[in-house]
Length: 255
Ligand code: 6PG
Image (cartoon, rainbow, N blue to C red; front, side):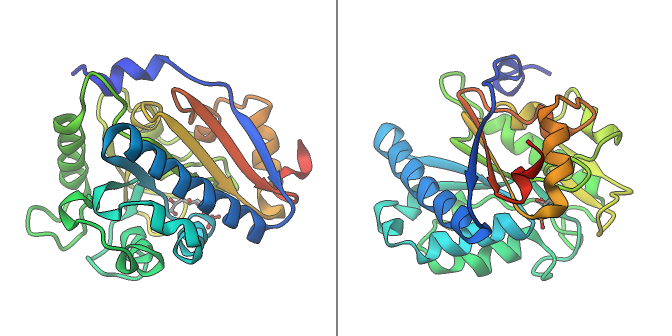
């Protein structure tokens, strides 16, 4: 299978780092940048497109978007919303990244439901198998890709202590998937064990990748990723035009 998602997989930016004094300052800064970037993408293309992530920092960023006065600069009805990964549990379950993003932001802005693309849930009528749900997401992305511009303006990613991003864990076969745009992940070391994730090729087809992580538990993973540990999916998560790691002082402590 070939297409834009594959074509962009070779073009990669060199990661930049932004260090923020505290986690709260990081979330405010990323929220402000996100609002500005979505508004700029809309000025350029009409539609903007963002990939949301799960995890504490990713969700805290969305809460800060909601609180930011510049939120009004974005036409939320013209933002396409995707997810980097999803926990394969029933729809509406509080563990779902979708449910958390809705609570934090999406239920509070006038999104167009037709432009919100959650990954499948374990009680979906079309399949209770995460591989079927991942294939459906993969097909959706393949149908939407266009030759002239990246599908995602910004891909937000949290980072795990083990160097994972989305639900791509070091050494897991899903992290090496070469063809599909989204994969099913079983035996995830981070609960719940069954998940769906964008693949690295898809993440790397984003115009910009913003990694967001905070706290002393992430210091070693961040330092290792920057030393080029290619076992870490986080080291390989780069955007075409820009890659930026937003770190608080603690997470940046090993750089
Ligand atoms: C998930 C995530 C995952 C997360 C990281 C960081 O669904 O669990 O998408 O990749 O972003 O584990 O999570 P924290 O910010 O909570 O450390």
